[in-house]
Image (cartoon, rainbow, N blue to C red):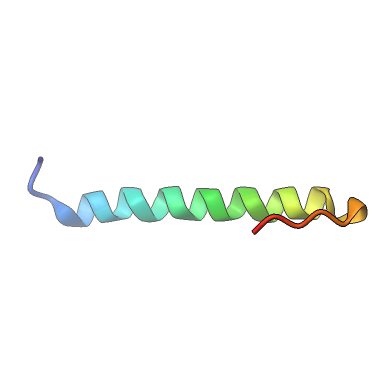
Length: 38
């Protein structure tokens, strides 16, 4: 829409990194219960 694919790609990468970090934190928090979500 803005014609700036580099910016849009950065947004997508940030979303992916946020989701990945969220899963890692969740896995660390529930590690004692043996629950792993990937």
